[in-house]
Structure formats: C-alpha cells, structure tokens
Image (cartoon, rainbow, N blue to C red; front, side):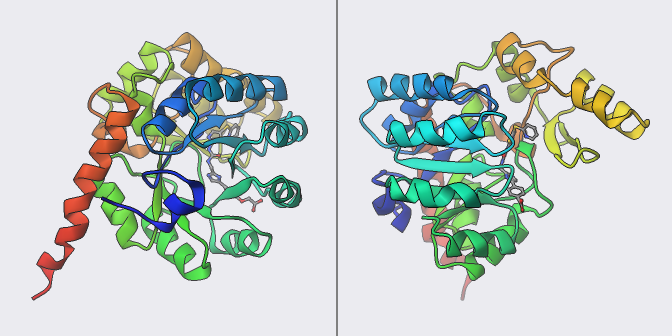
Length: 314
Ligand code: TUI
C-alpha cells in the first residue's frame, strides 16, 4: 500500500487530494473523497463566507474524516472566508491563485494545516519560511488558474527547495501520473479533472459529458492579458474570449466577458456561454465512478509501477 508522511501529517489513508474546483467542489464531493481515504477539499472560489460554512457543515454530516477548504486568493470575500475556516475548525486550508502570506499566522494559531499552491521555487521557499505545513506544486497542465511551469519541471525543483512534504498537481489523472509524481520527489498528489467524473460530483451533466468526450488537444489558455491565465476546454466561449483578448478589446470589457461564466458552465451546463475549466489530461478520464473507487484505482495502478521501477536497472 502506498503511504507517505502526508498520511500521518493529515490523518488520511491515501496521499491523494481532490482539487478545490470553484462552483464544483462542494461539501458532498469533499465528504465522498475523504470517506474514500483521500482529502476532500471544498472550493471557496468567489463565494461568500456563509456559503463556505454551509458546505463545511454538509461535509461534517457526511464524514468524520479530515476535510479541507481551498481559498481562492482573488476572491472578493477573502477576509470573511479566512475567518470562517477558523470558526469551523477545518483541518486543512489550501490556497490558490496568489500569495497567502498575510493569513498563514492566524490559520496556524488556529491549528489549521496550511498548504499553499506554489507555482515557483521562490514561492515554495517563502511558504516554507512562513510556516506552511506542506506545499502543492501545481504545473500549468492543470485546469483553471495556471502558472508558467509544467509539473515535470516544477515538482523536482520545489522538492529540492523545501523540506516540507510536496504534493504534485497538474496533468495527473491515473496511476501512471501518481507513480511519476512520486518519482519526481512528491509524497502526494492532487487531482481535479479526474474527480469531475465522480458520481458524487454535482457538476452539471453537460460538463461531465464534455470531459468524458475530451481529447489530447481539448484545452487552451486564455486570460493572459489580464494577468490571470486560465486553462479551459476549447469551446465556443473560449474561442470568443480568445478573439476578444487578442483583438484589442479594452480590459474592462474583457473583465465583464469573463464574469459569471464558471457558474454558467458548472451549474447551468451552458455549452454556448459557459467557461468549462479543465486540465490538459481530461482525455484520460474515461467513465463516471464513485470517488472512493477513483482513489482505489489510482493507488492500485501506481503501486506495481513504483515497485517495478527497478526493471530498468541491470
Ligand atoms: O487557483 C487555482 N486554480 C483556479 S482558481 C480559479 S477561479 C479564478 N482564477 C483566476 C481568475 C479568476 C477566477 C480557477 N482555478 N490553482 C492554484 C494555482 N495557484 N495555480 C497557480 C497558482 C499560483 C500562481 C501564482 C499561485 C501563486 C502564484 O504566485 C503568487 C504571487 O503573488 O507570487
């Protein structure tokens, strides 16, 4: 069985996190993942504090295992969400899309394990100094907000730069990806796109259908002009945004074009106007299945690969 220091640090059975996908990763999905032995993570996204509190309560009804909340640092409700996670005593906070320095002290004092996403070596070093419990090294293969570096390049360098446990993310959807991440020095993995296909994932059926139909070239990155690049499926909306971005649309109009579109995709399943965030690895997501089965499959595939690594050496 695959074990790592991440399991004892967090009290989880398998070193697998479910990514905090805005408008998608709710209390029900997080509880299913935690019950399956991984770490389920509720996405705060751009939602108010009370939404996050309600989802934590839903998860607590469904599981007695540790859960996490992902805090998106560009959120307009960041201050209230930062307080809610303390009041609700969530075990783990992960952060994304920015620098969580100003919150780490208060979260640590509350006994929360703080695990920021880092997209560079400098950020990994800073988070280590400020008291993070671990870091997530997320490559640009991932869905949603992306950094410059790929997983293959980022993970070993972050592992060299910190003594903290490193969780690899971006481009991992099966046991081969898990094994590869461990070979690069990670002691855990985070998957988002793969968990979109979980039965317990309440995303709109049109979203699941698009992920299950995706191929290798199905995603593109938009939003560089406004400084927040996001990876999404190559849809009608993505092409329209791209044309606007590179056709000289003023920043305020671009901002408006990108507002509310995640909800349209995740909740309404709007295939014309929605923004369907996805990782590059969507083509490896083949069927809908329970979250616990996904985790078990990942571990069962990765284990012989790690055990058999010596086959390459004479
Ligand atoms: O955050 C994510 N994925 C996301 S957030 C999101 S919602 C949204 N995003 C952008 C604009 C509007 C709405 C959808 N998907 N993943 C974690 C992640 N964090 N990936 C990359 C980073 C990152 C990048 C740069 C973290 C820190 C960083 O440096 C910050 C700094 O200030 O130096």
